[in-house]
Amino acid sequence: MSVLALEQPEFALAHRELLIDVASAGDFATYRSRTAARISMTIAALSDEERSPLELPDDEDGRTAVLYAEARARMPELVEHIERYSALWAAEDEALGRSEDLIASGAVAIEEVPELDLAVLHVPAGAPDEGGHRFAGLWLNGLHSMAVHNATERLGILSVRGNSFEFVYRYESWVQCRSRRPRQRVDLQPLADALSELEPSGSRWVFEGADFLIPRLFLVGAPESALTSDEFRGHLQDHLRSAPIAWDPYARSA
Image (tube, rainbow, N blue to C red):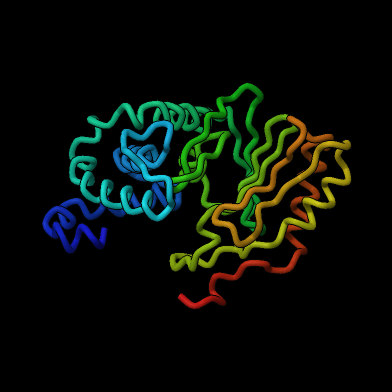
């Protein structure tokens, strides 16, 4: 947005709200305009070696430079003619629509625990789990993050699908959020260790770290947990309630 404001001020001003929405879709996985969601999907696809039409260098710095230049140059066309890039966004857009339909119909129930800034998603077995992109280099399976984040403001998301559980901290809890002061993150590694002791040999719980952009707590080595959903949720909520703060973005320099 800032680069376009300098290089193409009239275009940036005319499309200011949409460009802000694109940034929100890319960073926070929330959107108001479906065009903004599709632009974010397209930018993510451009960075994907398997889907990108670009010749991407092998080194990270080179890839970043190419992607930055290409996204900046293509932005006017993306804003005004996103349909030209449907080959890059159509499949993910359909996955987003399926997730939104499940939530809107009530097939996916969302239960909120405000004091823990927690949303619990009760997802039926067999629900689509294609997921969607996060930022420009990550892909999360399950319900599409944009569908979930548009349906709840809670920054801790627990997905319950039968006896499969996954918790994730949203990106807003990593940054210095000015619109509100989110509940701060705790370290879930002690919880992961304790949960692993309750699982059969060969499976264990992994936490990606409180300082990760969108850290997940998830099970590896088995498709389902030996715990019931009530047991898992009880352990998680007790830990969220009692553990000390492990990531405080407001204590860091802006």
